[in-house]
Each structure stands twice: as C-alpha cells, then as structure tokens.
Length: 230
Image (tube, rainbow, N blue to C red):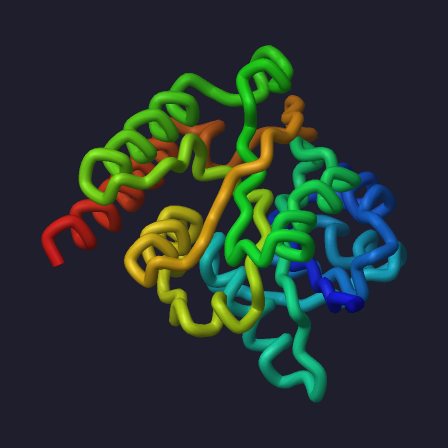
C-alpha cells in the first residue's frame, strides 16, 4: 500500500538553509509545505524556486506556522496518510525522513520522534539550555505519565488522522511537547528513532537567545504540569 506523505516546514529567515533542506527530502514525499513565519529575507522565494508550496503566517510562533500548514492540508480534496514536521535550518538530515516514517508504514505506529541521539549529534549542535530542557521535560513525562520519550525533537512523523484528533492548540514554543503529551493521554502508540543532528545554519531564534530559551522552557513546563494535574 502506498502512503501519501506531506512535510510541513516552519521557517523564519532561513534563506541560506532552506534550499539544502528541500534538495535532500526523499522523493517519497508528495508535497513539501514551507510556512514562512513572517520572514523578512528571501526564504519564500528560495523555497518556491525549489518546488515547495509556500505559505505565509505573519503571527510569530512555531505553533502558528504549523497550524497554518495543517489548515492548508485540511482544505485539500485528498488528505495525506502521514504528516512529517521538519525544521528549515538544516540541523537535521532530511534524507532520514525514510527512517522516521518507516515504523508508521511497517509497524502501524502512530507517532515517531526523530531522537537526537548523543552519539550521533555533532558537538555544539544543541545548546546547554536545549539539552537540559529536553532532559527535564522527558524525565517529568516519565515521572508523571510513565512515558519513554528521551527527546522533544521537532523532526517527527505522525498519522494524519491521529494528528487531527489531537486538536493541537499551542501557538509558540510548546508545540512539540503538546503533541507528545496528547499522544500519551490518548494512549496512541509512539516510538523514537535515533537520528543525526548537526549545527544549524545561522543562529537559532529560540535556543540561540536567553529570552527564547527561557520562554521555551516556561511553555514546555506549563504544558507538562497542566496535563499532570488535569
């Protein structure tokens, strides 16, 4: 059975990296949707030149961009079987998309996270706040819910029907953890696949700033405690 796969890439001022990302996405993908999150550079032009569907979301926030991509998919006559989320900064290896979707196709898993394995991670590719935040969030999820996640990695694949049932709401930094928490709550199946990770092109808009790291941490923890006492 053939599975229709669509990729959503939130991107904010990624003109120097987005072409590399798009060129390395496997051909099994039927459509790549780049959501420009109010970019002020040539991100949109470059993405269009490389064959992506380009949308623009002027409200700033990772979640806003993801929701824009999902709204576009929902309006299509034929919706996909699988949606993959991938960052536009070229820190991931887009060709590993086939590894991430394989458990869904072959084992009927609902959600697959590309876990940024320490052994496969380039030195300096994740900041200290990122590493600590991942450790804290995943350990709290283990403590409160018995979850087995080790990462909040943004490179992930999920069945489209499962994703729609999650009713995703977060507009900013909490998108990834919200998805994982709701999957746990709904008792959907999930697993992690170790992936490589390298230094991104350009400076991170979240982990690259103190303000961004603090707000991301607060948002992630607020989602976990919200669900812990719900």
